[in-house]
Image (cartoon, one colour):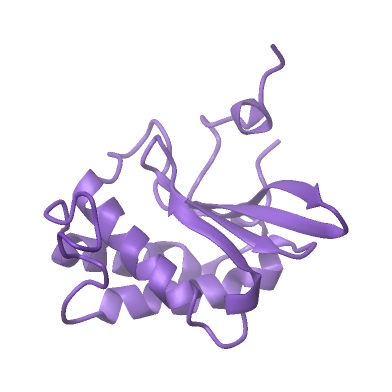
Length: 159
């Protein structure tokens, strides 16, 4: 079997940022998958499942309600390695096109107060595995250490 594209990225050089992971086509529509990398792989601790689950609920809610982007949101969810998230948007896009969207998403998560959307036994299959304080903490960290001063090295995969 061929090695999939995401396994060809040098994870030893990869730092937090927003990267175009791949582009796919469904009919005439281009789907762009973004790698929203929150931690440095194999260098920092991964995110715990409770904060990942919380960010997933908050992120999906925010993105599917954003007035400018909601019609283009296909998917938002965690990477299996727990170092970040995938965001799939309809459109032939580049990382620079979504910086403000990702920045506003994580600012919203960092400031979120109240009940996590969908965190009930009726709405979620693992509703108890949530940690809002840690989700807010890692969102603030990603904002301050990556998104607030993001540059080309954090927008294009390392060679």
